[in-house]
Image 1 (tube, rainbow, N blue to C red):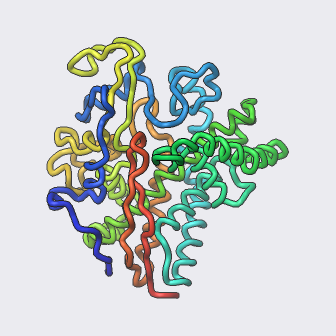
Image 2 (image 1 turned 90 degrees about the horizontal axis):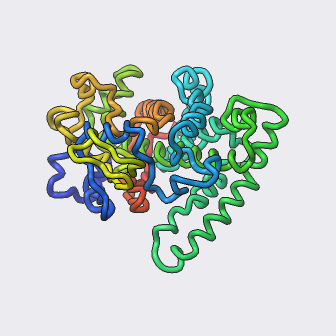
Length: 398
């Protein structure tokens, strides 16, 4: 299988199978003034402690006067459980099999057919279309064209201008509000109107049943639109790069059943987590979680990447991909890639299913090859995630 040469490897590349490790080493640092946690068991204990509050991303603050207008990411306690409980049913294995699988397979088949007809495509664009289509169906954002809508969601969140310097950074808040208003008027309002007339099996319909306001629905649409689209989009590309470069891993992926393919993807994600660093703040004095007491108001930086290669937790050769690792260590293989505790990623099985289905089809295409190694970028320091753009693939035309 043809693979275009990738950029020069770091001196210690032989010690890790991670594609993003070098970039992470240059960009991932705990914020000044935080206590840094790197060990797997300690990090998990922090995430599972109810006194530790979610914070750190450049969205809403944790505490708002009206919690109904806050992203679910920043809620805790009863309000968080209520909001999460309203949507968790859309991400269960049963929901994936009965509701989401048809749109996932239909979209993947369409993308692969188009790729075979043209003989050339951008893998990052294919992954964008798959993940965007699926999240739009789950949420209920289906009344307006997909690509411009997803652009509005991204810009409403302030990326990428919020982390650039100069005039772009100064104008980022205004630009974010304008795109947020456009997203609300052009995408969310039509979706709400359609579901007021006729309910469907999606998040917006469920929120309407609960009597949620249009603004509350906007908050949820923005939250799940970003979470469901961005992270999976990047993982599809990085997982494909591993399969392009590792013939044995690719063969095992194609010969394995659904469960084995999932284990391979989770092991890749262990070395390529989308969130490299997350943060928690203590709402009260906490003892027994870390070796030293966590004082009220103290902020912790949690190194997801470091925890995922903690040899005591993940076993020998933690920097190497081993599809049998989770079985050997009697773990489900998620490690810290999807978080833990109350804020454990609800959509993790949907994300892995999308990735598995698209890559299984892609690597069965005759003559599939990577002809341009993608450019790797890093997202805002507060998010500390990777992005891949311009990953060009080609195949024998049908």
